[in-house]
Length: 312
Length: 281
Image 1 (tube, chains in turn blue, green):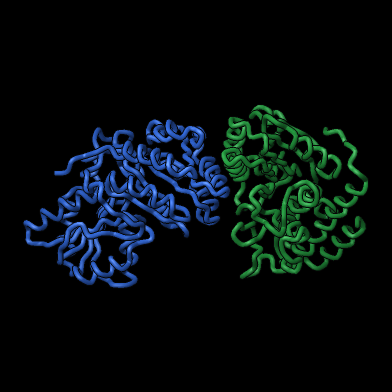
Image 2 (cartoon, rainbow over the protein chains, first blue to last red):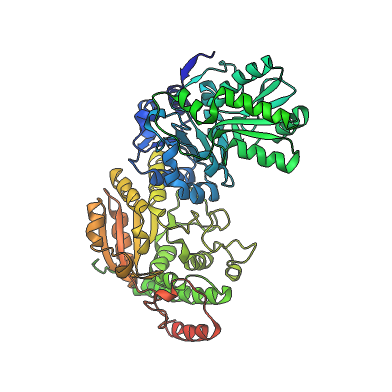
């Protein structure tokens, strides 16, 4: 249905290009530059590239030192391994409110073959709980690329996750994006599917299937998990009366939790969460069958939407 | 051992007096607040005195001066002495010290860079100082600035793994403007360093990580002066000064006692402590 492109490569090249223009940008990496493709940055901006070795916690604190000096550090490693640096992010980035940009690559289940040690299903939960932190999950490669200058020029800590997988192409070069603003990808009046990352394209497919079954689903691209776009969320709850969330993350603590918490507080309507159901995953040759097995199939979104509509 | 050099008696006396004044401030503050970490605040008094009243290039009227020396209190629980030094150096009124730890105060239970003028970095969880200092030094190189970055480490803090990540990084990038000082008082929260997790041979450990190492008596002002000057002149690698100190130095019933790592001072203890400390001024 969608053409694919290589998100990490596009992100890596775009970060390198942006670094040529913005000399304040520093890139730090923890022995994974060839994997997360910060090698492009290293080639174009060698004096501003620092490989700290397998030292994720130290990398975050070193990025903090750069931020204290007015530079804009991007600290890159695998999203799953960033959990090693949780206290550093909490104390020295979030609490100290330093201008550090943290990029969690190989996010979600996108490093399918390497198994549960390398799958990141709780990064959003952890970083979203930290005051001062902005949390972003771009929904395709163009969006990931567009976010680079936005997060660099945003004053304050940001966590953004990047998929290892080839992602469906949803946007073209004219795509406009703003931190904290979701967008309506497809309109509908019976239920709203709020998604990001790899699950946005699946949600659009689900909306097609729902349409053939007489349910008109609205689909929202909610690339910013924090701060959540509350005006858009209120509008969707009021206009469609039922909500489904879909994300490549545990249903505990991610986009689904963020939406459910906000809806419970403000406009109680049925909410169904699609994601990993509080369990560890496993290895797979490919991402798509793994997403299907762990509750993120297009049909899981369809079923969740049907249930949400019934509960109205 | 660093050879004593010809610092004037007047300078040495001034810095010794300030160290004792800071100790008095710590006891006043910890008594007033009813909590704090007196043991590890009293031990680095000569080090802090020499840094803040002689060695560091700072401007209290312009705390964000770009080429100022940076000081990071990696052992953030010892913030009483940092706050006292900042106040006496003119970064805030002395009166402010009375508010330490109260709701609304600019002086938190551990240092907060956003609330306290002169506090370079938020600390309190141990192990962060070296990596942050390395980031500052690397940024300074890129910006063509020649300030030095100083980190005061606790000895217990050397048990954290992240600290040695930073030690490797500083060595890899030859950060000669990074100067760490270990307040080696030998006692941590639960007991002595030797009982809980021994650090020896500490000099060899730092040398193995590529650092220049100086060992001094941390209560000797001339030795602290000499070591800091030597470290500043070192041109090709980071330097660590291992400063032997006494936890709770200056208050007989606190000296060497883990129980005084973190607790307030009651009225009776306060009277005795002040009597002892005032004999030195």
